[in-house]
Length: 429
Image 1 (tube, helix red, strand yellow):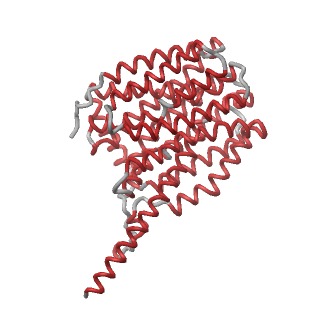
Image 2 (image 1 turned 60 degrees about the horizontal axis):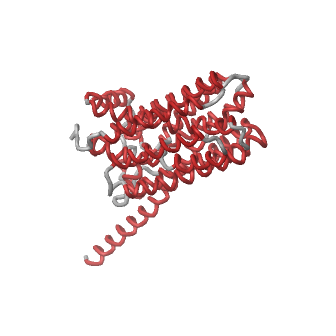
Image 3 (image 1 turned 90 degrees about the vertical axis):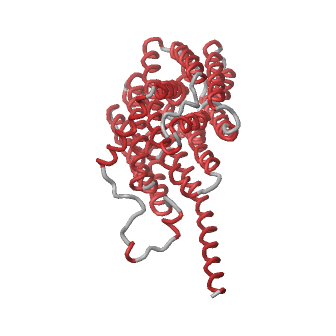
């Protein structure tokens, strides 16, 4: 009897160790998901001039594509959070890769800008939203009992690394073989490699991959059956947080954040450099430096956010963002664009950690998923506006000066808004 007991303990230990090791593989796959989706979405600025030339349209039309893409992306993030609870991260990520691949491969046959609006602005953007930090974080939390925040921060680095690599790579590949052939290459890689990888090897939890089901349990799933009415009911219930003024303050602050990072930078940084007459190599180095700074800041801020006031830390990041904007408003030499990338990049994805902590304190840990998902929609709404409005202003003045001034004003406003948020004002239990 004693021997049998020891054998059982040994088996349990092996399974736990095996599950833990596979958890690191889930972290790697989650990183790849964010790296690929955000890399393609975050390097939107590299497509602008190519689409203008191919479809004979001005910047307003391309900005409308970005606006539509970011709006759909924001809605998809909210839906992905609810959908992940019903069918699991593995299926949501697999669907996202199918949609992104279809978008890229289908774009080869596009002959009009509205084709891009449908393929990239709608189909692809649902895929981008499904492969978001919301989707993978659900799986990471289930796989790790300890170091959850650290593992999530490692995964989120993929959101910064994606644009850093894809930006310069896009510039090179599109110069060599055009944007359509580049999209075909990316679409084929996702279809042949990433779709099977997530469908076959991603696991939502240790139990899904390392326990043997009884015959009576065969056919049962870990998640409840998908129900569109339940999905919609859950999303509508999330709106209850907007009964409180503090929610609107946070939402507007996140709107400004999206306007001045994903909207302005990811869509218009490359065209800004081109409007200054800078060479492709300088623009590529700018994006590379921006990405490196983004990664360093994401890890650094994520580590120290538990030791400082999130409100003050977030305010400091926006002060740095404001200073960086003022630099390129008044100084237009290539070296200043690089300095801008260094400091502005430090304030991009690094804002996620303190914003998340503020929301967890106000809305409670039990409600953080749905609450932060709804507030994240405002970030993407701001990003959509930040993509469209600078495009409209550029068409009127042929430069980005007015857009940069508008962004500087909004960031200055954000410093005031964030600094005055009451982190102790808990509205949900």
